[in-house]
Amino acid sequence: MKVIRVQNQVEGGEIAFTLLKESLTKGAKTLGLATGSTPITFYQEIVNSKLDFSDITSINLDEYVALPIENPQSYDFFMKEHLFNHKKFKKNYLPNGLAKDLDKEIAAYNQIIAENPIDFQILGIGRNGHIGFNEPGTSFDMKTHLVDLEKSTIEANSRFFASIDDVPNQAISMGIASIMESKMIVLLAFGKEKAAAIKGMITGPVTEDLPASILQKHDNVVVIVDNEAASELE
Image (cartoon, rainbow, N blue to C red; front, top):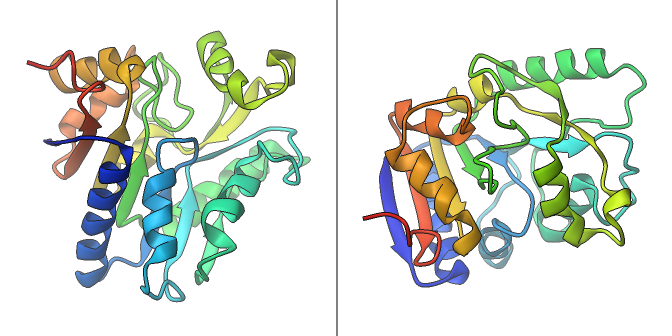
């Protein structure tokens, strides 16, 4: 696990984009993508670049259940606003949180991942150490699954909604086992509120109580952190 310290989120996005360019040069064809405020500067670098993504497939980590894609807080809406409306990809996959049969949707998404092995996976990390929406206690063997969101996750995400009561309490998430199959993982973390999770992920035991800690067992992980997120590291 390589740790790169940056001054701010803008620099973090620039370095992540440099790593992506290197992966594309080596033949990467499938990107695993994340949402939330953390990867926005990374997506800005992609949008502002002259790189051609028309032969690249993207697979998103997660999507809320029962939230219309027209809702500005849906991850479908987020990805279009920050990336897909600006860069043409070969194909963009997100879980369908509106599917009538969620079990069938989950099985289909696992098949999509199996048919499109992820070369380059972008991750954020939750305050409780979740990656994707894989909350503490999630089995490391889990693939795509339905998640009951933790109270702490709902509270953290409520800043994006008019009221905490508007935050969905379920999501479909790519599982930890699927994330770990990615050839390269780049995790971004910015801000003091991520410091404890980053410390546990890098220096703590590998435990399902802190899902991101499993990344210690992956042989190609780059962690990009600002000074605040790295403040509890020695």
